[in-house]
Image 1 (cartoon, one colour):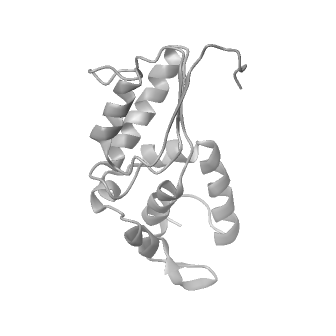
Image 2 (cartoon, one colour):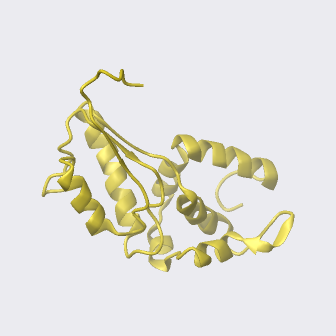
Image 3 (tube, one colour):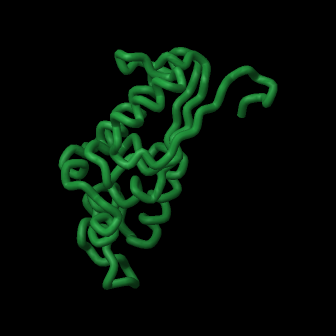
Length: 159
């Protein structure tokens, strides 16, 4: 963790919900993103508090941007990190489990929750194994993966 006297700025954003253009605009206004979409934040830190997906037109585009900015920020001495929100969990669950009933709650499924929360088929169609792997390496993603393996008794993609 940074010392509180460190001149590094911390920027926090959440609930992008697929609105990539607005997300880019906010990052540009904060001085973190150039007009070419490259990291311009130097040693600053960007924290994305989940909910990149659903409701808006390009959740996967928002995810791709955060994944790339993480690499570029680290190379510049800064940082960009995503903490998974419920919409990332729903997107992963939909991809892996679909309409399969939740154990112990046969009337519930990731598919039903995903749809109820504004899930977009275009995001599911573009979500790749690379995206899923990256999401599951986020600190909260590792916790979720351990928990679902515990209750499902299964491991790996395609449970």
